[in-house]
Image (cartoon, rainbow, N blue to C red; front, side, top):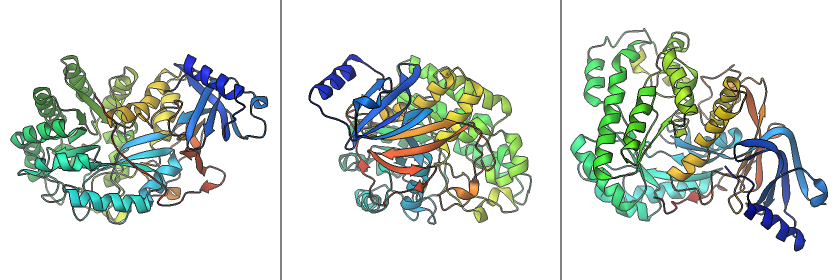
Length: 473
């Protein structure tokens, strides 16, 4: 997060001396190191020109001002796990509009698209053209690498703008979402290391999940049958395989959507051994337990599945301790007809969530810990840490001078989430009726107000930029 430092103070003095004023000022609670005080964020053009404590309208006469009182003035969120095109009824336009309305000003877009995954240079270029025409917020694009030698595409795709890659250790679909076996994974990791970028992995053991799935009655209507096909060891074994191969190859590894505190403990141990690894969890694992499946049934069918209540508490403890790097939505915008079938295993896995990511994470952190220490950890997990991990931090992730003026205002309160009001084409939310502890009231993308609670969305499709990777270590 940005904090007041000598460089910021000197910058302000120079501006005053030269009588240069910002285009707009946003006043509210700003973060100075790990403390929160009333202050101002100055915006000039599309960039942040200063962040400093104290609110003094006399310094900026005639300048447009938004004073949000004691609400939090924060960097725009980065959702590092969004599936805009895994279902053809969503698309980049709907997903990024939904992001904009929730305070997410940067999306990292997954590669497992319908009808074809983004695993060649031509498909990457076609997706870049689509994003350029449709995106409401800024987008970084991941590619994927096909089995049987697809790793050879990594160099060209990285040079063309892919910020990283995602592969799966579990077979979902042989064409769109295939499995990479352990031997092929070594080639993938070496290729990504050489090409640059982050390798994201869906870590579930293929043999365990498919073997247990084959043992189930396909006509079982008990939602917990899904849990029986994916016991904790199916996830942690996948995590260990990915970490061992990453330790061997030196790739920049990111483990997606972990549901268990043990996964965080494993990653922490490997980091201590020098492995370049990070992990994410998701709001659904921080909010729901497996017991909630009895009420919402297949609406909460997710891979990996929901876990017992003690795992939910354990994940919050790991976040507080700094052992969870990132929280992402894993936005999967299936319509209700694909989530309400009688037989549980026939339903699609995943939930829509890009629009509710900041509200759920920040609000629940405040509810759990009014001292703001957990809030700070949660904020970092949806802003600066994903920016750094995906090579975007030269422009994104904090309110630093010279960075993009991506800003969200978060107001603590008792507002309920309205699933029917979400901007995703999914048309529903598993969090409908939940009161997470606050709401996003204003969103700026590169200095432009694109959402306010009072006036709704005001965003032009195609205004989003395609982001490329900084040089990262």
